[in-house]
Image (cartoon, rainbow, N blue to C red):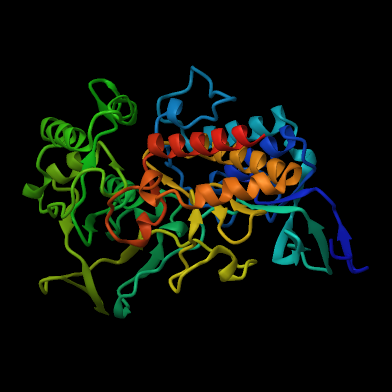
Length: 447
């Protein structure tokens, strides 16, 4: 083991966790249960991450609810109250995370108001982590046996590249949208066909004078309820059926519920069901049918007071909201540590384990077709057991790593998806959990 410079404080076998959102909390809890000392650094002054609307990086707006149902969103060892609705409000999700932290005593291991500036290898699998108070002041460097990154991937807005300049009003990213008051008596253009874009378009339909909804392609729009049950619960029960059968059932279900939205000007999907992230919205069809939302094509350019659409049509909104998603950002890590490509897309086993650095992992970097929290929990368990195995028996840990690295990506990630940034981390939650279970079994056999 290398000597530690005098200016570096050695935390020996402790693990550094970056971020105290849902995934960071799960990481702290499971690392502690596996016997590790943990230091978690959180730039904000409280837990909750994206679900804490007080945080300046939170994408949450006033009406935000879960789009995955409560049973498929809650942590497996900390259920949400049975009295809560199928799709809880964001304030309930935050209170749930706060209670989770309190129940497991996680606040004791979190340094609030502290930002991670850099994470660099120190040799022998160890890491030098530089932190600084978000209020300024001097920085400090501490050495850790491992690093778990849980800084989220829904906070750095991905702005669309649109030619020209819009002078007819405001252009904002959906991350800056917080309250429907800003929609009242406006002519609103919403750009983006994801869940956020659909939700904001529906909200605008209730408050704005005019609403256009621009999408690049067609999507499959599912209702929140099917046969009286949350749609994701029904889909989960059918997960063992062959993909072709599930796709047929999905199309038939939409034909009987949402119907053919192309008659309202919505573009026809250019892909099969389950090849894009599920869009779950029961109200979009309603407001399209009532003429409160006008479906339009892609935006080609801004031209002063007007916006030009594909095909040459022009419209004159006075508020443009770009619901174009977010890009993953790891400013404290050199891109090569995560094998990131030129576009910033990391190459991680199970979207979690750095391939060249066995003591570096990311938790929560997933886009599942159900709730994220159960997956973040089991990711954290796998990371904790991996670090424990590596500390106890490096040779067996290396053998497990070599076997796992050879596992085809198609066994744990979506086999075929629309090739966009939005689907970089797309997974089927059932297939993904099976893959994590396989890793846990490999590690159990190695002990």
